[in-house]
Image (cartoon, rainbow, N blue to C red):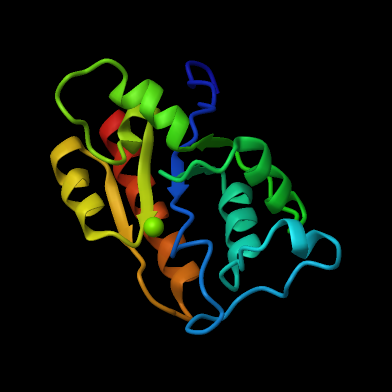
Length: 171
Ligand SMILES: [Mg+2]
C-alpha cells in the first residue's frame, strides 16, 4: 500500500541468568537429560527441563535471547554447552563483560546486573534484588527461583505482553 511503513526489524531482547535459572540442581528441579559422554565430563551443569524448547520458541517468535550471568564462565564455554542442546544465543554478558562495560571505571558501585544497558527488556533471574534494580533502571524481571512446570509458558506470555506495550509506545 502506498505510504505504508516498511516492517521494522526491531527485536525485543530477553535474557536469562544461568545459576539457579537455566542451570539447576537435579535434586530439586526437573532437568534435561545429561549430555552424552564425553561432554558430560566437560559440561557438568544440569539444564532446567524445557530450556532448549523455550529458547527456540522465543527466537522463532521474533525475540532475541541473551544470557546475562555474573559468573565468570567464558562466552565460548557457554556457547559450546548450549550448542550441544541445539541452542544458539543472540548475545552473552558474563562477569567479565559486566565488570568492564557496566562497572567500568565508575567509582559508584553499579547494580550486579543491568540488562537495560544492553537493550534487554525482560530478564529472568532467581534473585529478588535484580527485580528491585529492574524497577530502578527500567527493565522487567521475571523471578524464577523454584521448579515450575509452567515456566516456559509464563515467560513467553510475559515477553509478548511487554513487546505489545513497547510497540504501542513506539507507534
Ligand atoms: Mg542466579
